[in-house]
Length: 218
Length: 218
DNA sequence: AATATTATTTAGACTGACCTAAATAATAAA
DNA sequence: TTTATTATTTAGGTCAGTCTAAATAATATT
Ligand SMILES: [Mn+2]
Ligand SMILES: [Mn+2]
Ligand SMILES: [Mn+2]
Ligand SMILES: [Mn+2]
Image (cartoon, rainbow over all chains, first blue to last red; front, top):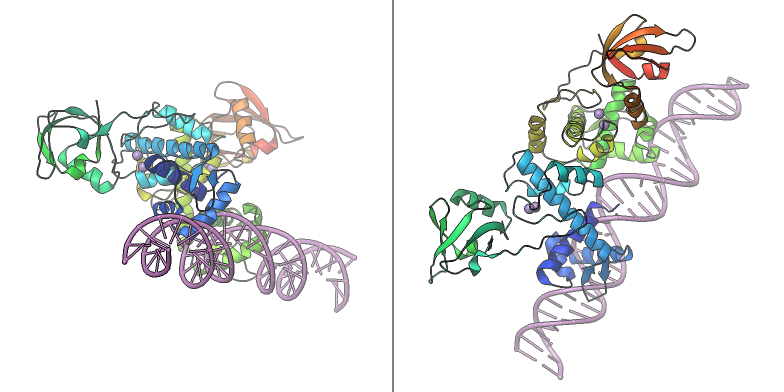
């Protein structure tokens, strides 16, 4: 139906729209996709013709309803495959993204339907990101950044905003896993580093950069 | 590493070489891939340059050792994915081929390694076709066509030579499944139709065309 | 052996997805 | 408010993979 390329553009536009607001500049898109801006302009014209996006010269781009549906379904595929790779095949959470980038483009509604059932209709992927349902409906996460919590506060570790293998590995190393209860023991004024008390009674100190990449709920 | 297109050419050449002998004519390949013969000639030149095939003008084509390795690894991927789709996701054996045509191109040795382990290192796919191991080694099947067996003979149903959904569905309908014991009760002289006695005591009569598409082992 | 048929290759063209270099528009700095 | 910088678009090209039409080679028929 749509080429891998088109699907990747749609996904990138979707994510940029979520992060940076209404419309997306060609330059942003070019950067996100590691593609020349001139090529992006080319592609925008073609995709506008196909009614996948709304595009006007010098005014940026946004998804059409159709484009949004496609983007969300690719994200659904991606996250379900990540669950499969971790839960069933035993991959670590830092290894699955690139593989899911390939698998997300496999065309078959039936496959995704059966995969979803096989995995027990998971609501989140291995990084805590929500999995949209077959109709594209998301459970909007109510999590906040750990960096927004004061000393004495607490929450449950529910997700990350940095998905890099390097960061995920670091979390493994310091013993932080999705679902863990976290109490903020202290926030150092000097460098905003966070000292956390984990359920296991272990105390760890992490930099602001780390605290600012962790999502916690309630 | 290699494009989907290249991988599909390699697989097609491999299968034609297996079926029709040493070298493959461009016209055969064109037919198998549903591609114009002129396009095939083009592609042959490019793939010869990459040392994936041996090609000489007007003399047909055959796989290089490198090309053979790639072809076999794609076939391994294809068959492992078919096992996954049937055994784990609950697809029927007549539904999985087209999906496996997509999945076979996913690039990751680790993935296939883990998938293989997850499936319990299966030796055959849902159609009875052997799955090459990670080194590309096949267990050559010793099965023969049911049509080569005389009245009174017997064997175990181990595979099909016709993989079409129509045929596979037909087998489901008459109650023939992989692994079934089959006894040839009678071969009608007039039209070479076969009357078979199944393990379940049921007797069924199938046409020569059917008997000629079933593989059975000693 | 000459002719017709079929297979293969060459020539030239197209589409999708990219690129670089140059032109134009928008924004920021002086 | 000019001028410099940055963003965007246009123009023209490349590469992979395909096509059609025409040329050539091989094979089959008469
Ligand atoms: Mn991912
Ligand atoms: Mn994820
Ligand atoms: Mn198959
Ligand atoms: Mn098969």
